[in-house]
Image 1: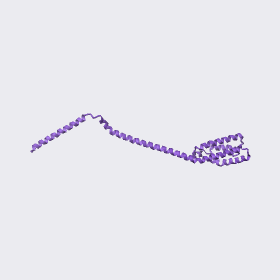
Image 2: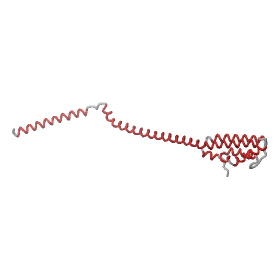
Image 3: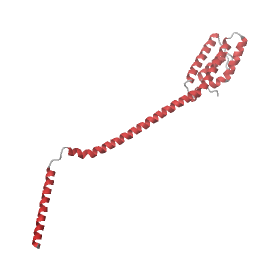
Image 4: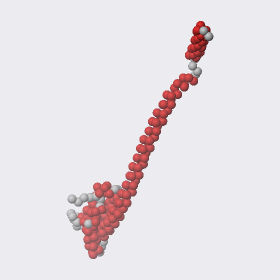
Length: 203
């Protein structure tokens, strides 16, 4: 094969290749001019929607975590308060029992000392009341009871003695009993700190 034939075949091949390139470009131009399918727009926003869903899920997870932590903290605080209240009530039981016993003894002594017709029994009751007045009552009485004890004590010649009529004695005994009842009901609900604040202090 001489050089002229080779050149001719090479030229033909180049021409065929140019025709194929033209056909390919024509097809690509037709595709570009053809309107995009309706779902093409949706497909373009799929990555954005996926990202937004991921972010929303992350934010929601954080919110649930924070709410769970807050609820756990509240539950823990409520449980702690409940346990502290129970412990306070258990701690106050001996004080309440001691208060009830002392109040009962003081009221019985005050009643016998002011109303008994037997001089010996009356003197013994005055002595018992005096010992409670200056002794055990100081550790358990609240301000209202302390005032009632003073009023009855004056009728028995303690502190600032007064000459009391039978009616005044009865009224003061009833007032003391009422003060004791209120005091015991309050003590049953108080913490030791509140109980201590409500006690009468002798300075």
